[in-house]
Length: 190
Image 1 (cartoon, rainbow, N blue to C red):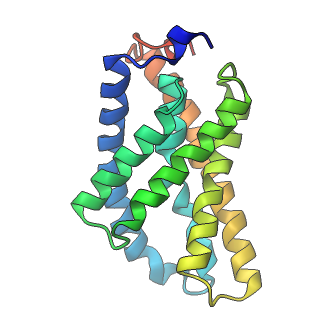
Image 2: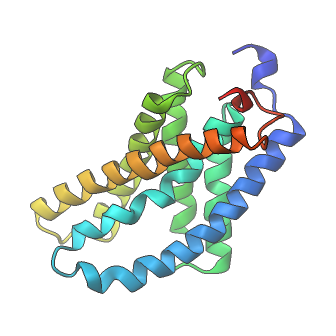
């Protein structure tokens, strides 16, 4: 990636912000869905993590679309901020979560030298994003769980993140490119 590929354009910032706001609204709804589905998972609480991956989408999607250092963090923090402002039970902690959930996919794309944008690296980026909530949630909210519950929760969060954020983010990027919505970006070519 040359210097021109690293410099942020106005369109990059606007699209990252718009993605963040849109996904932040989805986060807000998803938080209500999470709370309302909790009773369905009383038989095995870690299984609720199967729907976790939606919260990890912006970091991967921001990187796949904008393809610049910082895109994952900006998109993820913007989504977390909107979610917090709309009202979330997790308060200010969503900002830290947003930062980490945007940073970890960036590490994966950085290791790919910003040259790989296919399904494989997207799945890895999604799985990496899932590591942050695994550690945070187990330390902050589920520290009293048995080790088997903790292990199951970690595996399910990472798998959910790999599928929803990784595969979903890649498919969404391809669909937006085919619709012509990504014309100003290299991601328009796939």
